[in-house]
Length: 517
Image (cartoon, rainbow, N blue to C red; front, side):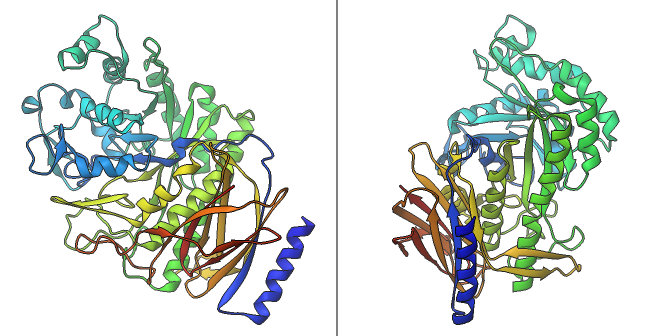
């Protein structure tokens, strides 16, 4: 601690003499405990919403767009590069109006349905249970199924689990075989409803608690398949919901969900691409407020579950802006800038602090919806700045958290609504990966100044091996179908080993990931 205080004083002294390049100090310690970053913290979310499924993940086997058995090849290959650990489907709000038997069997005989939650779009159900679970096998990821509590029955949910996971000589298992799948899939994660306080049924927490207990009873384990049952949890600041479920459901659930969106104002979300510097910093403040929200929900869970047997699953998070002009209302198509990239990076930095409780998160969403990885338009595809953050952070999956102490300047931000928050100019996270190398992620959110980062290690002086950089000339820069490479990862070498550690010179508004050994 004395070392850090000295470093902080040195940093403050540096402010007197330099403005163009401001010094930040960072001390990385050895792990205090075996705190592993669950790979599922880097999970994805695919809802039947807009063109996430149809045109995004799925085009059908007869499409002129190159595909593998109906799955878009370009999207499939791009997602494989992220080593996706888990994919959530079919919703979201859509889940509690989805009746799974409409989406199985010969595709030309499946009934169409109206997506009442998202734009009234008529879907042909050509992408259903078989298509989703086969996609997860292609991606090498765990499927996360959201079950229908809002408008479905216990029997319907029980039969769905049996259809997917039973290898017995029973009607549902034989129906799966008749539909071309002899052996059951492995399905670990199963959500018993979604947003049951809102679009999933407008329920009160005590009522939903009883429903969960009932529905979950009939979600059975078949053969060696063990379900990890996830209860529909709270929206951001609804701490009472968490308290009631922990009291009334407790160990009957394996996980409890939480949703948190970075939205300045639900009634005035703002443009995804046109914003000023104060709106940028305000967004960062709202993003980082998730830490206080997590702390309060975790404290409630700790009260009832001190051994942390019940996982917290932040299965919807990310930015939410006004829909892009010229796109269909209710499809939630938005562009994705460097601002969104910072939200992703800073959110991961926070998640890493609480991996003893947080075991899964799922950004909303994977393609063409909200803060997506990928945008598509007909046969064109573009990778977003958020995609590149996931790629840069990929080696944090399964790594061991390294505690760090950081001394950085802070900025007081007042939003258009009058909310005041304090944000640090530099944020960081560190972990030792499976190869024994240190992954260090640094974010300089300062729009005006470069940052000199003085890094020291608790025990030995280590050597930086390589670096990746994500930045652009303007914070509002984004990739389009005409200009797909405006924002992309580049090699980063502006670091050097010193007698005391490592010095890094970060450009303004940049994200850097270093590999150190």
